[in-house]
Image (cartoon, rainbow over all chains, first blue to last red; front, side, top):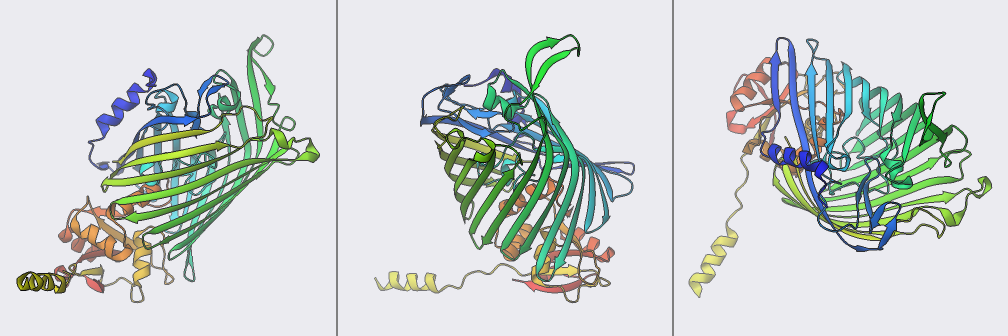
Length: 397
Length: 139
């Protein structure tokens, strides 16, 4: 499948692949720096559970829930799900402690449409403390902040069992503090904000591509701390929000002059409190990198809870890297709230990735992965098993 | 056969060619008397931004991918420049750390460190001039 809509992204990716690294310019007392990243990805479905799920021809493997990036079984090479191009500009004001950063990303999965992922003002009020205001990534996981930057990742795409939720950004304020405590380097942060997602790609995966779901995460409050000592690093994060979702049913409401909307049946009531807990552990010793991440989401009153985890091992061999990763997601029924253990989502993904650094700014990766659907017999939509081969060229500039 | 054996012995007993040593340099007025090698690594990786003595280190690096930069990160971290760039891609594209100031060559590095009290840099050991202070030799 080679969607016409992502041609623009692919042409841009190819054109930019020869760009020099970073550009900088000074106009008066304002300094501008520009940089970017790109991934040209292609995948071929090798096998899995054949059938039609919602409006997809499967086997299907969801590469990124948040961006509705799906490799399906329609045949042929698929360029859209993992290809993306990001451009970032930073303007430093006459007071060098204050800067404004914007990052826009065009994705094949969104037919080349450009999204503003980051737009924030940053004030560094000491060399160890920074306050940022604007639009940023929600720092839920270890790689959340860099989830679009293929060159910063050991895979062709992030393990979808953990990464990719209905909201991955927020508008708000964050504070970041660095410190050294004994032999430990400490990075601590806190955030406050809100997020409003219209026409959520995440919910199109569950409700069909024609569905329209609006999502609001209100009163987001979060904190995270990262501790590093020599070859060991651990990260802990907590984020809570009030979640609202509305399904737009396409019927015009004359009274409101809007399309009619109804609360999402998955939610407990009109608004649900959500508490997200994550932890990560990383051992980076000599030529080995071993990482594990854990996720738990609790929504008091809801009839299920989310659990996800992953374990990855990477071996570096000069310009080569070989990574093995296993990631698992399962929803746990809360029977006291009417949850049905046989109607819960569950899947596991195992991948093997080989990466070769073509230059200090570019790499090529080959990844084979196998997804096993372990959802309950009453779980829908059941995308089934899939075996996928992906190839990616990443570059920063 | 003897000639072949001799050749093999000569080749295998030849000492490995060591990388030229690097000097970590600072301004004469910089307060880096107790700086450790680990701290230098942390400073260049954006993890350590303030020292216990209150100094805010300002690391200076080289533009592009010159051999001295590749050697510095290999000796200090055991990683290739591509791996370091992958790490910095994660840090700089996400606002977690400010990229280090980049200079074109060792002359510019010596000049910048000589002028800035809190600057840290690295040059070939033989390039150190009286305008800067050598903190440690890396080899």
